Image 1 (cartoon, chains in turn blue, brown):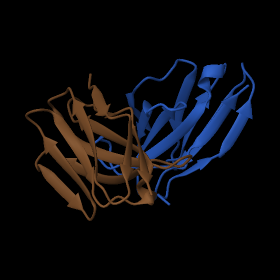
Image 2 (tube, chains in turn purple, blue):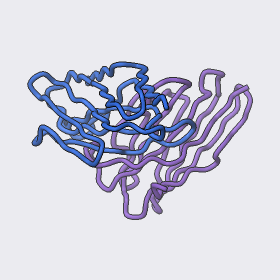
Image 3 (spheres, chains in turn purple, blue):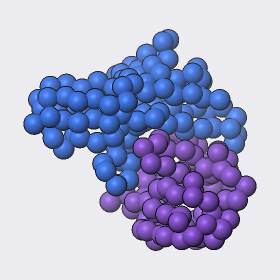
Image 4 (cartoon, chains in turn blue, cyan):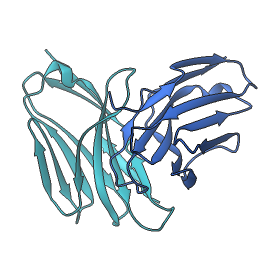
Length: 114
Length: 115
């Protein structure tokens, strides 16, 4: 167990809908990262937050947004869902703001868009 | 931006033999290279990492080597066991400009250990 928690574990929804994924980082970690992993694909970096503020953006669609709250948990919002958004969504956390800090992954949320 | 290539995409090894997975990267400023193991349906887990000030790091049956001149790094697993079967991802990260750092992952290697 990495200490990073994610909810829900599974999510099934329809095209056009909006969902929110939640992540709580390890105790003491200030950075949260979001990744998307499609079937048989690698990990695509979406976005990073550090201590409540957006730190870096990767390949995140405009339909997706995220935020980090004062208690450091983070939410990833996915809207106008399409079939191709079906994937595993991981969050990871690290102590500091830089990507060379070790990242610990949560168990992931499996999103299925029907 | 950084580009990380990983080979092979699949690897089958007899139990007890060694497995080697190789990655190349494009950004000469990269200075941190972690390896993650992902079992089916589970989270990626860090198994070993290396920073650019060392050329080799070992942890029991796992070792990573780094060649900064050639811009490649490799994962070596010796005395493989069935529980080593998983997908392995390499990654490279560089500390360049504030907000412009990036941890880029390779496409993964599916390792199967044959009993």
